[in-house]
Image (cartoon, rainbow, N blue to C red):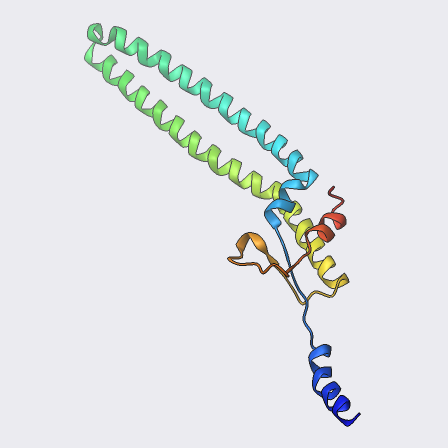
Length: 163
């Protein structure tokens, strides 16, 4: 009996301080969230608008460039220089527009995905608190996950109403 008490006295602190670790795959969860499809649709629309405008600008440039090529040999020097300058400026505007479009698209994507990221993070935190996890790691960033590691993916999916 005395030995049992000693064993319990030694084991009790370890049981009280037991920590529960879990993991989730945020990339998998994120991809399955219904909000992501809506963001993708919005981004496709925005990107399509920029691509259409860029195509129009390129078409106009190509037209003027072909006209320049066809008539440059018969143009007066001043007119040829003016047309060359116009083509150079058009090309610069197209490049600037393309860079601005890329930045705008990236900014809009971040803006639209921020609430989705927050929702996922909140769900993971709520599952962690409700199920008593000390830590929940992201398996997408993990190098090794032991076979007996606890996955919290299903609980987070349930919290997010993902099937």
